[in-house]
Image (cartoon, rainbow, N blue to C red; front, side, top):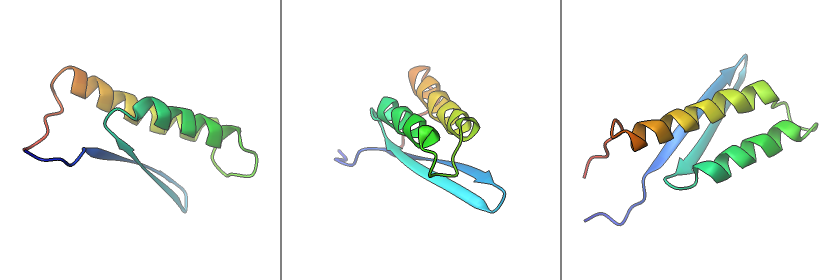
Length: 74
């Protein structure tokens, strides 16, 4: 039995910028909240579209897990 918690990586390439975020299983809601905080921050070059793209990736992962399409290897 593994004691390691699964971690997912999501990415967005925007011109020369590359965003990579990692999210543990069960932390998806917190990750989406963090993406919204970044989008609201005028000091960051991260906008609402960027947040939407990454949030969609997180949501797709949740859906895949809920439907059994995302099976982790033991």
